[in-house]
Each structure stands twice: as C-alpha cells, then as structure tokens.
Figure 1 (cartoon, helix red, strand yellow):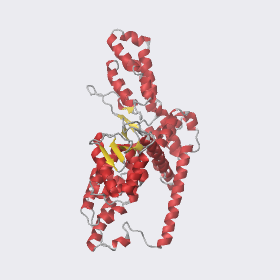
Figure 2 (tube, helix red, strand yellow; figure 1 turned 90 degrees about the horizontal axis):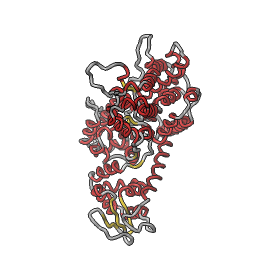
Figure 3 (cartoon, one colour; figure 1 turned 120 degrees about the vertical axis):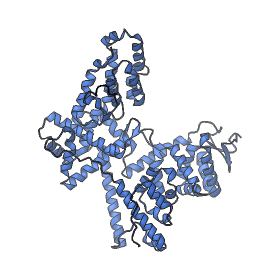
Figure 4 (cartoon, helix red, strand yellow; figure 1 turned 90 degrees about the vertical axis):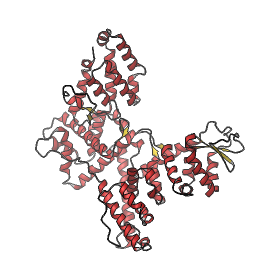
Length: 550
C-alpha cells in the first residue's frame, strides 16, 4: 500500500468529513471506522452534515448509531424512550440520500424496528373500519389508512412510507398489520395503545441489551444515585466490598472482556501471524493505485482525529510541595498509585464507571454533563468522601491515608457513595430551612410592616408548596421562585440557595469570601470537594435569618 500522506493539521470532524466527501475511496473507508469513533464524528459535525458517512455505513454501524442517538430520557436518570425528534432527523437524512435509500434502510432494520418507528409517527386503521376522512395528512396505502400523529411531521413521514410501500409492499403491509388493531380501532382518531405497548417493550429491551453489553444505563444510574440519598452514612463508610449493582456491572464487564479475548485468540489462530489492517486487504486489491493512496490518506487522517479526541482531563495534577490542601488529597493519592499499574488501572475503571453513572443519572441546570465535567465531579465527590472519613478519624498524614483507602476495593466507589450521600439531601434541607424561616413568628412580625412582601412570600412558598416542588425535582421552578424571593432575601442568600437547588447541588463561590465592593453578585459555583465546603453551607443555612431583608 502506498505511504500515507501527511494528514491535515486541523484534525476536526468537519475537516475529516470534507476529505471523505471528495475521496473515491469513501465507500471502502467508512465501513472500517469503529462504531464509537463514527458516533463521535457524527456528534461533532451534526447528523444533518454527516450524509457522506451515513450513506456508506454498514448495518452494524447503523444499528449502533441508532441505538446511541434515538434513545433518550426526558432527563438523566429517567428510562430511555424513543425520541420522535431524533427519529425525524434520521428520516429526513435518509430521504435526502437518494431514491429508495430510506426504504432500503427501513427494510434492513426489520419489522420490529419499523413497527416501533411508525407506531410513534402514525395511526394505522383497516380501510374498511376507518372513517373516510382523507385529507392532506392522511394516506390510503393498500388496505390501510394511515394518518400522521402530528401534522408538521407529515412530509418526512409520507416520503418514507410511500418509498417503503413502493419498494417493499409485502413488508410494509406486514408492519401496518401489526399496528392496526382491527378488533378495537373503530375510529381513526380514537384512543390507540399500540404505540405505548411497543414503546414500553422496546424501551425495556433497549435498556436490558445495553446493560448486557456492559453499558451504564440511565435507569441503573438513577437507581444508584437515588439510593444514596436515604442511605446511612456510617453504613456507607463501613463498606468493604462493592454494592450489588457495582458488583454486577464489573462481573458483566469481566465476562465481556473474556469473551472478546477468546474471540481475538480464535481469530489469531485462524489468521496466523498476519497483522490486521484498518482496511480490508482483499477489498484493497480491487482499488486502483489512486484509490489506495486516498484510502491510506483517510486512514492517517482518521488516526490523527482519534488522537486529537484524547484530551486527558488533568485529574492527577496536584501541588508538588509537601503541604497539600484537603481539596487535593484524592488527586495526589491517585497520582502516587500510578507506580502500581494493576491497582491504578482498577481505580481508573472505577472512575470511568462512576463518570458514566453521573452522566446518565444527573444533569446540571438541565444540561447533561460532558465526560470531562463528569470525571471532575467524580473526583471532587470522592475527595469529599475521603475528607469525611479523615474528618472523623482526624488523621495527620491525609494523603497516605487516602492512598491506603484506594489500595483495594471498593476504592473510589466507597468514597463516591459517601460523598454523594452528603450532597444528595442539600436541596431538600435548604428548602426546609427556607420554609421554616418565613414561618418563624419573629421574622413574620418584622415583615408585618410590609404586608405586600409577606403576602408574596407566602404565595411563593405555599402555592405550590416549595418543599414539594424541590422533592419532585422541579428545580427550574424552584430557582425561579428563589429569584423572586429576592424581595425578602439578600442577594447572597438567593445565589447560595439557587446553586443548591439542582439535581447536582454546587458550592457558591460567594461563600469563599466577600465580593469586591460594587461588584455584581454572580451565580459562580464549583463542585463540593471538602467537608469544609459542606460545613460552610450548613453554617449559612443555620444563619439564614441574617439574610432576610427586614
């Protein structure tokens, strides 16, 4: 194979896709991209601009992409459901890739997938039972009448359905037969349970399949994190083994790794000593010399893109001097463990597992965490757990003590569980303190001089009940309430309480010191990482009465 040309210096997804779009080796190259890298490329450039890749993906790659993109929870920690919005993006893309492309892809994905897809997009009725209400959003196909569930979706859905009927009529009719409950569908616009049944079954199968494949699912993450809120901190601190969920996760991981190793050994026995190539050697023989050169260039650019994506988070950077701050104990201890490869690798596996848990199970002000944010959150929370242990034991050589904690299982997992427990109750605690504050007779007596303020406060905290709002995890509503409460609270209190009122409570930087005179109060915050942070918030809540504008 010709020597690869030097890849572009700008190793972005867009530059790589631009290179692919103009290459004659495109159809040979795309199927060689591993599914994870392909998903990263699509995410980076956006699905709508990823047409050159999608047009040539293999069936395995496509299934992986759909599995990763079509399923999402309303918020982290909720069960994943098929996203209609994402589904329509895919249909629009397929419809734009040429006549028959969408029909071929739907047929290849099978009747289970198509039944699920169309159950979310269409109401299907037997022609003889359906009322004759044909309009611009209704279509007669074979012996069925189909109507789009949301009128704005009709163009993409109609194009997809008519293409499938044209190219695979028997398949299309079989799918519609599954969606048409003839014995109960007496009205085209009546109640239809088909979508709900299919969605529930598919959501369960999706979650079960991902767990079996070694992924952390949203349901797993939500259950893990919620259980820590009501746990006993002393019980968590005394754990000497992984919790059952973590044990099961690593057991599955071990089985999968063993299976992959066995498969790789079997392939090695079959292939002899021949080294695998990124591209298929047999296929490359059919390419011209120019195409082989372009293929090699694309492989080199893809390798450069992969290297550019590895942005190591500075998790282990700590001060070099002997005096280490308590916020750095865990980082420094982890850094020391690098001399023991086996132990260090196990802790990094735990870090990855915990990072996936928080990405799947919690959001920050409604936004999902990035992998870097998740990793830093986990390290900070583990450090908080370690500080709790050392705070109780009052050990002098803190870093060495943390290093000993990390020398064996349950390692980071135990420390994270302690730290998360300390954080999980902060929003509810703050809500209770705030409600009790404005129910206090002394505070109400002082506010009586401003009856309109008192009425407003009572309305904000009582209708709907503020504590119930927080308990229901309606944090955006809670934060809006707090901002209006600025009529009765100092700005500092509003800031501290707002950053606590979240699925991921944060430490307000205003508590680190007085802002410069004349400075605007901001909502700047950071992760909790020490017992000092937690105690500072507790002290602030204990003295919340001082923040009332009397």
